[in-house]
Length: 100
Image (cartoon, rainbow, N blue to C red; front, side):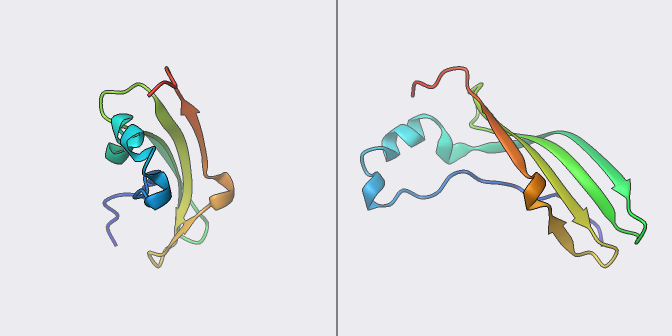
């Protein structure tokens, strides 16, 4: 099978009633418009014919410097199934300014 794209995280969730006082600030901060950019990918062939993949990804709203810097580690097995290594899924937040 042809793999056209890897997994994608999202940190946005639709606001609920309890969020009514902060939802406007979330939108002002661009959290409803997060975009993913892949900064680097490495892969290794596994003995069983599968492929392990490590992707460095930046998730951020457009035009802002603050971002989630993420690393995805996943395996695509020879049969086409995927396994995301949740133990090694990591992200850090780089924030130039926390003010919204």
